[in-house]
Amino acid sequence: MSLTFPEIKQKGWQALVKELGYAGATKFMLLFDAGRGDYIEDRKEILRGATIEKIRDDIKKERS
Image (tube, rainbow, N blue to C red; front, side, top):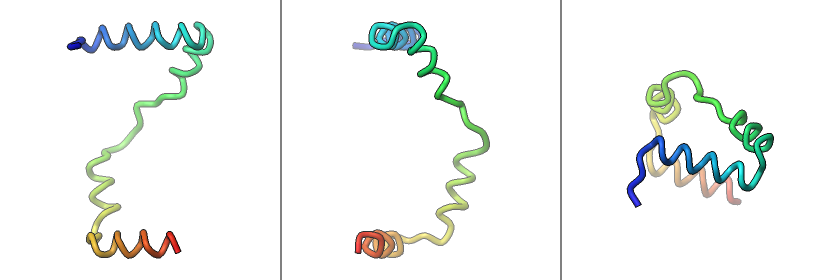
Protein backbone atom coordinates (compact mmCIF):
# COMPACT_ATOMS: atom_id res chain seq x y z
CA MET A 1 0.00 0.00 0.00
CA SER A 2 1.60 3.25 -1.12
CA LEU A 3 -0.24 6.18 0.43
CA THR A 4 0.55 9.85 0.12
CA PHE A 5 1.13 11.89 3.28
CA PRO A 6 -2.30 13.56 3.02
CA GLU A 7 -3.94 10.12 2.66
CA ILE A 8 -2.06 8.80 5.70
CA LYS A 9 -3.11 11.88 7.67
CA GLN A 10 -6.76 11.43 6.67
CA LYS A 11 -6.82 7.69 7.43
CA GLY A 12 -5.06 8.27 10.75
CA TRP A 13 -7.58 10.89 11.78
CA GLN A 14 -10.46 8.61 10.77
CA ALA A 15 -8.97 5.76 12.85
CA LEU A 16 -8.58 8.03 15.87
CA VAL A 17 -12.15 9.28 15.56
CA LYS A 18 -13.45 5.72 15.18
CA GLU A 19 -11.69 4.59 18.36
CA LEU A 20 -11.82 7.73 20.50
CA GLY A 21 -14.60 9.91 19.10
CA TYR A 22 -14.01 13.48 17.96
CA ALA A 23 -13.26 14.85 21.42
CA GLY A 24 -10.84 12.03 22.28
CA ALA A 25 -9.12 12.24 18.90
CA THR A 26 -8.68 15.99 19.34
CA LYS A 27 -7.24 15.53 22.83
CA PHE A 28 -4.86 12.89 21.48
CA MET A 29 -3.62 15.26 18.77
CA LEU A 30 -3.03 17.98 21.34
CA LEU A 31 -0.54 15.69 23.11
CA PHE A 32 1.91 16.09 20.23
CA ASP A 33 4.31 18.97 19.87
CA ALA A 34 6.68 19.62 17.00
CA GLY A 35 9.43 20.25 19.53
CA ARG A 36 12.13 22.85 19.54
CA GLY A 37 15.83 23.06 18.95
CA ASP A 38 18.18 21.12 16.75
CA TYR A 39 18.09 17.41 17.54
CA ILE A 40 21.26 16.66 15.56
CA GLU A 41 23.30 19.25 17.43
CA ASP A 42 21.79 18.22 20.78
CA ARG A 43 22.62 14.57 20.06
CA LYS A 44 26.20 15.44 19.17
CA GLU A 45 26.57 17.20 22.53
CA ILE A 46 24.91 14.40 24.50
CA LEU A 47 27.07 11.72 22.88
CA ARG A 48 30.33 13.72 22.86
CA GLY A 49 33.08 11.39 24.05
CA ALA A 50 30.82 8.34 24.18
CA THR A 51 32.24 5.03 23.05
CA ILE A 52 30.63 1.66 22.58
CA GLU A 53 32.62 0.39 25.54
CA LYS A 54 31.42 3.21 27.81
CA ILE A 55 27.82 2.72 26.73
CA ARG A 56 28.12 -1.04 27.34
CA ASP A 57 29.66 -0.46 30.77
CA ASP A 58 26.92 2.04 31.68
CA ILE A 59 24.23 -0.47 30.70
CA LYS A 60 25.88 -3.23 32.77
CA LYS A 61 26.21 -0.86 35.73
CA GLU A 62 22.54 0.17 35.45
CA ARG A 63 21.37 -3.46 35.31
CA SER A 64 23.24 -4.51 38.44
